[in-house]
Amino acid sequence: MSTQHFVIWWLFIKHLRDYAKQQPELIGVDIRAGSKKPKDPYPCVEIIWDSENGFSLFNNTKGELSLWLDLWIRNDDKDPSAAYDALADLMDRVCTVLVRWSNTLQRDLGYVTTIDVKDAVSDAETNRPLAGTRMILFIEWRKSRYERN
Image 1 (spheres, rainbow, N blue to C red):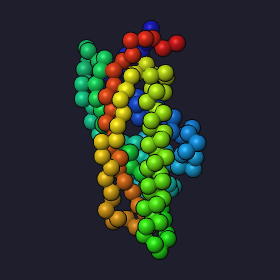
Image 2: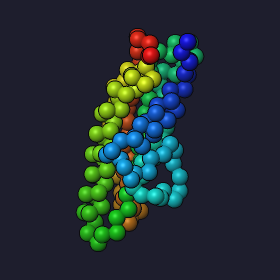
Image 3: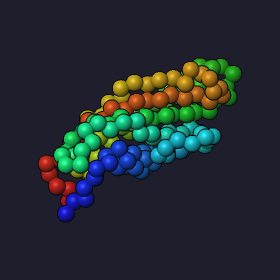
Image 4: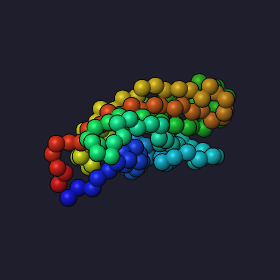
Protein backbone atom coordinates (compact mmCIF):
# COMPACT_ATOMS: atom_id res chain seq x y z
CA MET A 1 0.00 0.00 0.00
CA SER A 2 1.45 3.37 -0.97
CA THR A 3 1.53 6.31 1.41
CA GLN A 4 -0.77 9.22 0.58
CA HIS A 5 1.10 12.51 0.24
CA PHE A 6 -0.91 15.71 0.41
CA VAL A 7 2.02 18.11 0.79
CA ILE A 8 4.06 17.59 -2.35
CA TRP A 9 6.40 20.60 -2.00
CA TRP A 10 8.14 19.19 1.08
CA LEU A 11 8.40 15.72 -0.46
CA PHE A 12 10.09 17.22 -3.54
CA ILE A 13 12.39 19.55 -1.56
CA LYS A 14 13.70 16.69 0.59
CA HIS A 15 14.23 14.52 -2.48
CA LEU A 16 16.03 17.29 -4.41
CA ARG A 17 18.26 18.10 -1.41
CA ASP A 18 19.26 14.46 -0.93
CA TYR A 19 19.68 13.82 -4.66
CA ALA A 20 21.74 16.97 -5.29
CA LYS A 21 24.11 16.18 -2.42
CA GLN A 22 25.08 12.95 -4.21
CA GLN A 23 25.82 14.50 -7.61
CA PRO A 24 29.45 14.93 -8.73
CA GLU A 25 28.73 18.38 -10.20
CA LEU A 26 27.86 19.68 -6.74
CA ILE A 27 30.69 18.24 -4.64
CA GLY A 28 31.78 20.95 -2.23
CA VAL A 29 28.48 22.84 -2.49
CA ASP A 30 26.43 23.09 0.71
CA ILE A 31 22.87 22.09 -0.20
CA ARG A 32 20.08 22.66 2.28
CA ALA A 33 16.30 22.77 2.58
CA GLY A 34 15.33 26.23 3.73
CA SER A 35 17.25 29.45 4.19
CA LYS A 36 19.63 30.62 6.90
CA LYS A 37 21.72 33.65 7.80
CA PRO A 38 24.59 33.88 7.51
CA LYS A 39 24.56 31.84 4.31
CA ASP A 40 27.98 30.24 4.80
CA PRO A 41 29.57 27.91 3.98
CA TYR A 42 29.94 28.94 0.35
CA PRO A 43 29.11 27.99 -2.30
CA CYS A 44 25.61 27.00 -1.24
CA VAL A 45 22.19 26.19 -2.66
CA GLU A 46 19.12 26.85 -0.53
CA ILE A 47 15.91 25.12 -1.66
CA ILE A 48 12.92 27.21 -0.62
CA TRP A 49 9.20 26.60 -1.05
CA ASP A 50 7.25 29.24 -2.97
CA SER A 51 3.79 27.87 -3.83
CA GLU A 52 1.79 24.72 -4.56
CA ASN A 53 -1.25 24.78 -6.89
CA GLY A 54 -3.71 21.92 -7.15
CA PHE A 55 -3.49 21.12 -3.45
CA SER A 56 -6.42 18.77 -2.77
CA LEU A 57 -7.49 16.41 -0.04
CA PHE A 58 -9.52 14.20 -2.37
CA ASN A 59 -8.11 14.41 -5.90
CA ASN A 60 -4.41 14.76 -5.37
CA THR A 61 -3.14 13.15 -8.59
CA LYS A 62 -1.65 16.19 -10.31
CA GLY A 63 -0.57 19.70 -9.57
CA GLU A 64 2.01 22.43 -9.94
CA LEU A 65 4.51 23.89 -7.59
CA SER A 66 7.15 26.53 -7.53
CA LEU A 67 10.45 26.25 -5.67
CA TRP A 68 13.18 28.82 -5.29
CA LEU A 69 16.81 27.82 -5.53
CA ASP A 70 18.96 30.51 -3.95
CA LEU A 71 22.57 30.08 -5.07
CA TRP A 72 25.39 31.92 -3.27
CA ILE A 73 29.11 32.11 -3.91
CA ARG A 74 31.85 34.13 -2.28
CA ASN A 75 34.46 35.75 -4.48
CA ASP A 76 37.09 38.18 -3.18
CA ASP A 77 38.68 38.85 -6.58
CA LYS A 78 39.12 42.56 -7.36
CA ASP A 79 37.68 41.92 -10.81
CA PRO A 80 33.89 41.79 -10.34
CA SER A 81 33.46 39.64 -13.44
CA ALA A 82 35.20 36.79 -11.59
CA ALA A 83 32.15 36.51 -9.34
CA TYR A 84 29.88 36.34 -12.39
CA ASP A 85 32.05 33.58 -13.81
CA ALA A 86 31.81 31.55 -10.59
CA LEU A 87 28.06 32.13 -10.22
CA ALA A 88 27.31 31.23 -13.86
CA ASP A 89 29.34 28.05 -13.44
CA LEU A 90 27.34 27.07 -10.34
CA MET A 91 24.06 27.81 -12.16
CA ASP A 92 25.11 25.59 -15.09
CA ARG A 93 26.01 22.74 -12.73
CA VAL A 94 22.69 23.06 -10.89
CA CYS A 95 20.78 22.98 -14.20
CA THR A 96 22.63 19.82 -15.23
CA VAL A 97 21.54 18.14 -11.99
CA LEU A 98 17.93 19.34 -12.38
CA VAL A 99 17.64 17.70 -15.82
CA ARG A 100 18.56 14.31 -14.31
CA TRP A 101 16.44 14.85 -11.18
CA SER A 102 13.19 14.81 -13.17
CA ASN A 103 13.68 11.16 -14.19
CA THR A 104 14.73 10.23 -10.67
CA LEU A 105 11.45 11.54 -9.23
CA GLN A 106 9.50 9.03 -11.29
CA ARG A 107 11.78 6.16 -10.37
CA ASP A 108 12.03 6.95 -6.66
CA LEU A 109 8.68 8.54 -5.80
CA GLY A 110 6.31 7.63 -8.64
CA TYR A 111 5.75 11.18 -9.93
CA VAL A 112 6.05 12.19 -13.58
CA THR A 113 7.29 15.77 -13.77
CA THR A 114 8.03 18.58 -16.15
CA ILE A 115 10.61 20.87 -14.56
CA ASP A 116 11.69 24.22 -15.92
CA VAL A 117 13.53 27.27 -14.68
CA LYS A 118 10.90 30.00 -14.99
CA ASP A 119 13.20 32.84 -13.98
CA ALA A 120 16.62 33.67 -12.59
CA VAL A 121 16.94 36.87 -10.58
CA SER A 122 20.14 38.62 -9.49
CA ASP A 123 20.84 39.80 -5.95
CA ALA A 124 21.72 43.12 -7.67
CA GLU A 125 25.28 42.90 -6.35
CA THR A 126 24.22 44.28 -2.97
CA ASN A 127 26.09 41.68 -0.94
CA ARG A 128 29.69 41.78 -2.27
CA PRO A 129 31.95 39.84 -1.84
CA LEU A 130 28.95 37.48 -2.04
CA ALA A 131 27.08 37.01 -5.28
CA GLY A 132 23.73 35.31 -5.51
CA THR A 133 20.83 34.45 -7.71
CA ARG A 134 17.36 33.07 -7.21
CA MET A 135 16.39 30.44 -9.76
CA ILE A 136 12.62 29.97 -9.79
CA LEU A 137 11.65 26.40 -10.65
CA PHE A 138 8.23 25.60 -12.03
CA ILE A 139 7.25 21.95 -11.65
CA GLU A 140 4.19 20.28 -13.13
CA TRP A 141 3.64 16.87 -11.60
CA ARG A 142 1.25 13.95 -11.80
CA LYS A 143 1.23 10.57 -10.17
CA SER A 144 2.56 7.82 -12.38
CA ARG A 145 0.06 5.21 -13.50
CA TYR A 146 2.57 2.54 -12.60
CA GLU A 147 3.33 1.46 -9.06
CA ARG A 148 6.90 1.70 -7.83
CA ASN A 149 8.69 -1.49 -6.85
